[in-house]
Amino acid sequence: MRVADQIVVVTGGGRGLGSAIVRAFAREGAKVVVNYHRSRPQAEALVAEIGERDAVALRADVTDQDAVDEMFATARTHFGDDVTTVVNNALIDYTFNAELRAHADELRWEDLATQFEGTVRGALHTVHAALPGMRAREFGRIINVGTNLLQNPVVPYHDYTAAKAALLSLTRTLAADLGPDGITVNMVSGGLLRTTDASAATPEAVFTAIAESTPLRRVVTPDEFADAVLFFASPWARAVTGQNLVVDGGLVKD
Image (cartoon, rainbow, N blue to C red; front, side, top):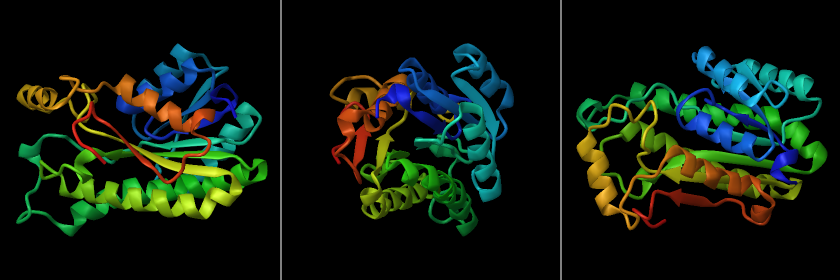
């Protein structure tokens, strides 16, 4: 299925990386659900930018299955068909500044549980909501947003990284489970992006150090990352599933 024929839910789509992903799909002609939790003004502004015929802003806490189910039902009513594509991008409140994160002796299970709730439980809820429609048409694209910290854990983002590692595992087991239904499940993993709401607190020296360590000698932008997400939704990736594509300017090798 062409990207232009897809109906896409982007969780956490109102701001940061999510908004770049929304714009990328809209640019290619897809219909897009801009999911938000507390970013209503940003989500509605994004819809106004794209146009209400092609985008709709819908509030849902991804940790709440009932709210997610309602969002998918509303999306179907709005666009007249089932969601074909899900991008699990939502991130529980997080600041990418190593000086503010808990080290091993300070890390609490509650920190890990919070990230698992948003990252893993949130993705499970969107998959549950999307499956009936995807199975009915024997087509579906599930794209999870990961991190290169799995390969390069240079900062103490223990809770965030552990949750993304679990999401990668879920990506691969879901790919095996859902492949016979015509549904692919993949992950796109980035490093620090210049610049999102979450990375706004990152010291400039960190951006500089990362740029100098990459073959491209620069930090990847949200728009560049979003284009990689498009690949997994496109017909060119129709035989690709269970994969993790690292998009960080060549900093790490998966």
